[in-house]
Image (cartoon, rainbow, N blue to C red; front, side, top):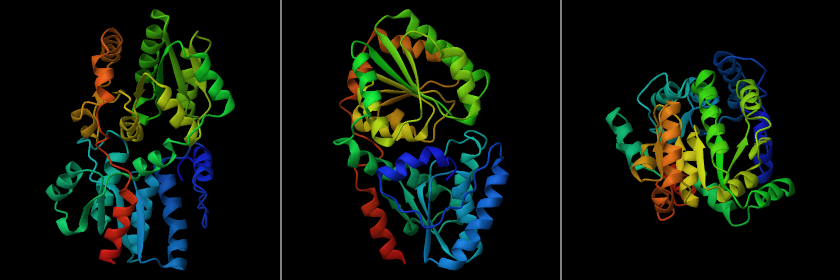
Length: 332
């Protein structure tokens, strides 16, 4: 995993048994450090296990490393979340190029949407090797949705902010680091301070580029709550309690629609245009002025906020894993 500590609560929640821990993460390492170490260690594991197929999910550097390691050993590769494209090779970085390269290495492509399928076909991937499955993140979300309960401390926070319109913020992408993140956090702080019935809940990513800026700009501000990274059930509970979500996360774009929660995407582009097209998300761009405008529009007229509650999630119906398994059994 690229974020080992952040994964621990999820491993526990899903009762996952780890057979091989690559232990590739080190402080301050570059994508090349991660890739080279992951490829070398995966080479040993794959040589020992010799699977018929290696599944990689997403567009992380470790996903690309897995695809390279398997390809070089003559092991077939299946790519979950195939066909996502932002159109800009450097944004998100390095994810956009990672997923393009994985497509070239993969034998089976599991696309979340028909849009993703058409993208793959346009790039020369055979239709017979593509399955439109939805995204497994929706499977996981729906599995936990009914039983997800916040921990005691988070439950108290949700209760104490019950008289406010809660804004959930997540931001951690490399493109957001530096002045862009500083500007966005200042806009959010000023927005919260301007309206007494608003609160901001921000699970802060442990990356120093996020943590330092968050504490500097938002620390000690009334009705702004900086939280430790959350477990899966806690995050679901917080999403459900939110009035509006502001995020640069790809995963959140897939999760928010399942709960009818409106989302402002604070990125220059998105590889998930389906959310915008369905009306459940708005692409703000990387301008803090645009973020301020969208926040004010959402607050002043809740027509959009209310309309999102009626929309279906364009990224899946909870049966993605079932479709993936069936396609694999047909092809191997």
